[in-house]
Length: 608
Image (cartoon, rainbow, N blue to C red):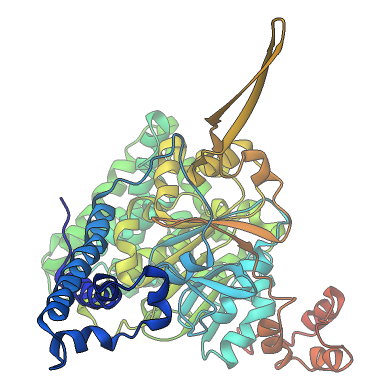
């Protein structure tokens, strides 16, 4: 049985005390012979106290006053009794459920979202009754939206204009860079980088910058990069066998390159290889230097090992490993060797392209600084390059996450900023194991993910059915626009829950005379049918929150909201001219914005 806590008990006692004296002040009239209908015009609260304490009151009146107090006290006890019954009562259970959308009161009380709060915290997830909704928990956020549903204009752009920390964005059309980079640079104080390795206009990202083979974790870091190229975790049979062999070859060539660069740079001159630690240079060694020459050079280094100048004890295992892997590779039969080299070369062929080579030979931004200083990196691969880009996209995001998960902000006060990974067209990145497996602790590293996809089948192809279930379950906030896939719509419909509307049925029987009968029963109905989710109005969305009622609201478009557009207009002479000619409530057109973007007025000022 439940009981009142101390605060509740004191409150009820004070209420009962006041109520009992109020009742007594009425009853005392009745006990002294005043008819009930005449009490109202005669009643004065102070008469009770006069009857109790006035020297003019006789004993009979004083006794009636005490009796009135007793009656009032007993009557007032009904309040705590009813409260106790209510406290221990079991809510009426509906047969099929009582799902509903959040009310204004629910949203105000929410621990997950803020409504209309412009303190700069959280991820913009929608607009409710004209005010922005922001998700303020550190968990993952997902957006399921069909093609051309406005996810860029309603979620991506809005967040890039309001997110105060660092950000990494998959920007497949460079639309985000063209619209938001100058604002993030000039107003939000971010360093801006654009990584598009298929174009000359690109900053550099060299993944081997994060590999130091002199450290105990060096080989582990290198193997992590090898796993990105040659997946052994989710493959089997011959594919896994040759991926493992290609991994070994990759680790061997990169290790050999690192050793020569660090301890025997003269050897690279002999091989006619430029002294640069990059994947492209490792490929130069692979294509230009006979494998037996590399094996011989490594063997000579091991003869005198350990040697403080040519092969310190701390790296003997690195040199030995590279030597043994290359030796094993050289002894393979022609057919097997051909299969291994085919696998090895296939995943690295992009690094032979001049622009990709140039962009990955240098390093202009450091993922290790993401939580130390404000920076925004746009991964701006253009649509015509998307088909050949998955390896680069996967390498980029896996490196960014791995590097940031190697430093815990709980033990390093310099890691003071939050970083948002805004992954539009998330399936195009390929498999990222961290997103599926490490969701439980990523948030503790001041990293937040906003993943955007069109439908579940895209994720099933990459992560499998069970992997997709785990992945989706890791997102505590799910934004849903109009959905195109039936399976996805049915899943969201089930998550929204069911209601139990009552339906009346009428029947009549004719047997000499007409008889009518009515019955009432509960029907099971989803809060929203899958078909209704597929037919959501273009401006509407549904948000599912862990442990809270779902929210039906509007999209937070930036282009028809003064809150966003005024920020862009302040940076653009073209938009300022357009705005001067518009009336209240009018906004620049799509053509106006296109003209502005063609002039580069909203792009950051950067040097490539």
